[in-house]
Image 1: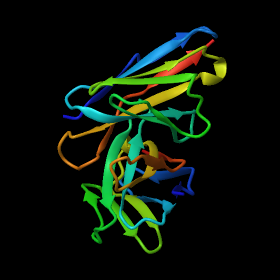
Image 2: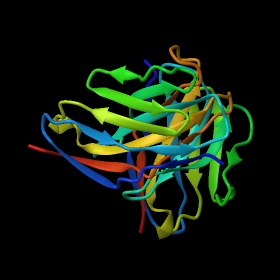
Image 3: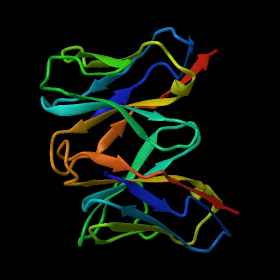
Length: 115
Length: 118
């Protein structure tokens, strides 16, 4: 069974600094997708970044980048130059590479940005 | 593009009554819709998967007769909480998957519905 683990319930970072959120997952499949979603107080799920498992290159989206270690089943998110608007709940998610796919979400990390 | 809406955004109902939540894909056809439940400060838990025109597939532990899901068209899925009880109070989120362009099998999340049962 697929499981996603986020070992940091809460994290804080000074504005303009860098923070890394951890995520590990367990799967026996070789093809899958990994995601980081942001859920601000509005509760709307916002896609931050996506990584295809078959790609060795780490995904980046502006200030957001991932460190994808497939063998270690690790998928961490790095937020550079943190901004106040980055404060939110961050969920790591796994999805199979199939048509009937579903998301498996981690328990989330609450990120506080300190001015 | 790829916008998913939910209605209502929040609803309060009395114990024993039923409440319907709508999930709509506004600019694409959603072949599959997913319903999640989220308790405060917790993760999203998948309740059921619905494909247009067929019966929903429920996750283990989710009562089919209590959480009725209908996916009658390619743009609309509804979740009806029947005979609601205070323990059904939660945040319900839908997501939709379809050929919206971009990445295949991508899912798009609605803004959620907060249900409070008094």
